[in-house]
Length: 175
Image (cartoon, rainbow, N blue to C red; front, side, top):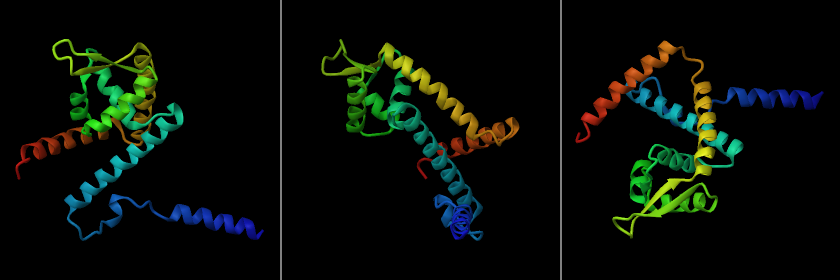
C-alpha cells in the first residue's frame, strides 16, 4: 500500500512539474514580443528534440546526418563541402566528420571536381537515396503528428504570420 501511494505521488510530481525550457524564465510582466520569441524558441527546441529522438530510435542516426542527406537529396549533382557547410550552417570540420561516416556506410560518395581537382563534390549513392527516402517519409509523418492539434486554418495562419515576421527580420539585418 505504501509503495502504491509513493508511486502515485511520484507520478503526480512528474505531471505537476513544468518542463524547463526557454520559456521558463518568462513572466507576465515581460513584453509580449519577448514572450512570443521564447515560445517560438521553446516549440522549436521541443520539436527538434522529438525529431532527434525518433531518428535515433528508428534509424540509429542523428539529425545532422539526416540534414546533410537532405541537402544532397535536393542537389542530385552533388555539393561541394563548402556548400554543405554553408547550407547546414556548421563548420567545415563538422561536415567532414559527418560525410566521413556516411561515406564509410556507403550512403554518400565523394567525387573529384573535374574543374578543380582539389575540390570534391559529395553525392548520395543509390543506397543513400533509398535510406534517405525512408527517413524523410517517417520524418514528415512525425512533423505532421506534432502539429496535429492545430487545424489547417491555424497552421496556415501561423505560416503566414511567421512569414511576415521572417521578412521583417531579414529586412532589418543591419539594425
